[in-house]
Image (cartoon, rainbow, N blue to C red):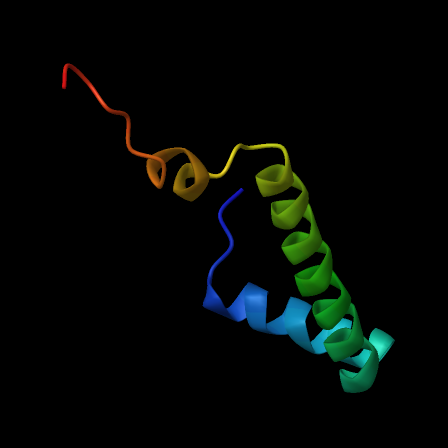
Length: 61
């Protein structure tokens, strides 16, 4: 099933009529903050590269 430009435009108009512009923008904002929180959660489990590379090791002095 291939959707062309006309079909996508009709779907967009139907979604705008059903939900309204304000509600769609609010949903988009919530989705963006959810993705940001998810990425923060993924990075929280990783060790910091800066802390391990800032302590130089001394070898054979």
